[in-house]
Length: 614
Image 1 (cartoon, rainbow, N blue to C red):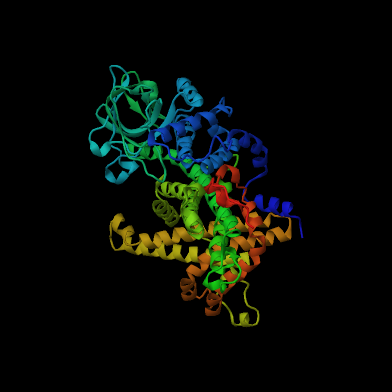
Image 2 (cartoon, rainbow, N blue to C red):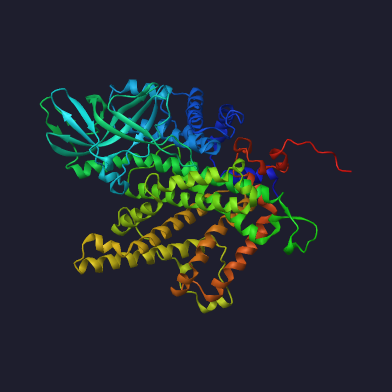
């Protein structure tokens, strides 16, 4: 049997690549547990101010000559640790370094007249924000009503909010004393014609308050993710020509507008290119809090004792001995490893490509990681008893981040529906091929039953589900169109099927990742343990759809009924390795600061002195 350290190193390679080890000393130098202790008892304004103080602290300790967005090997480890230390800071950090800077790099590429703005952002003399979503029209970023009207006399743009439905909400720009600049999406109007949505650099406020014409109204913050939320509207704000992030468009000296994109609808869709930064960031941050929640809960379950009814009132035993706790907590470990592998796959040294399939995989994995994060943070909190509700133990903080990112960068449900739309169209997509392992079970299997712990069988079953749901969706869409239905009605009664198909696609992507990542482990024992822990989530998902697999003839009744027992058997195999599996998730426990991650957690909640027991 390999040593504990080598086993942990092997498992940790599923979570992080080798370059992560090189950044650890730098991260530890930035994230002092004292400086990043969880805020407690602060008034709202003080809490908001602390967020921006911490942002500047990090900025002062990284090389800002090159935008962090272009230093991916440093950016993503920073994002992980920021998410673990302070979810509110994570939100502000990614809005500043990724979406604000990213907008300028994306739509102002090869320009030399925005250097001063980038320099201010690099130094955090001003803090960036993204102002896309508006109050009305279902919060749809495709229905932006804010207008930027071109004035040919001055070559300026006049930014105006035409009504309450066009007010930007909820940018976090309400904290007084902090200079802010926003990337604002607005409908460009040139010569009284709509030219589509563009991004504009808009100075919002300095330390003294909002700039003329900018109306910032602070709003209540969500308790689960404290940020200086506000509504923002514009009353004739004049912007110099250079603040237009024009991309491939231009307006000549005579006021003639040209754009490489042929119409306003195509131009408006380009603004969504920014969302891919949100998807990458969300994948990394949500995977981090998923790992931390699972690891902390598993460690606590080994030191949380009970001697209740089901223990026969015998000597106390740790709750991790109970199979229902194992199913919950080892299931959380399983989901944490899957989230980590998925995040690693989209946060490599090179950005994800812009092909339809690559972008779909990116946002599909963002959606599935968010689902895993919401599930694990909630389950870990519940499995930790009353201490799970203690703010110090971080589950509520991490759950809040997962809830917030369910909506950020398009909601999880909308992402699945968008994936289904592109899959149904066949955009850069070929359904999984038939696999012999998923063929209808044969009579010979009574003598030679299939191994439900075999990754090849998981791949075959999940691939078959994806393929058959895809075939059904395409057939139903085609039949509806043949009946002469409009496109809304074609899809309206098939959203549930579409979402099921996209979720099946997501699960198959996870299975492929597990096979590739665990297959690369050189040690057979580490490979087996890694596949065992991953199997809990994957087999759990297959079990959840066992009725479908039965109806399709892909599982026998005996196989379906054997799944719950098999999951218990996997738990029994994992139990001796649970702490190793938790610690191999690379969680910096001192930074997380959860008392229950340690055996002496009770001392963190009281300063009372007690006499030694006699």
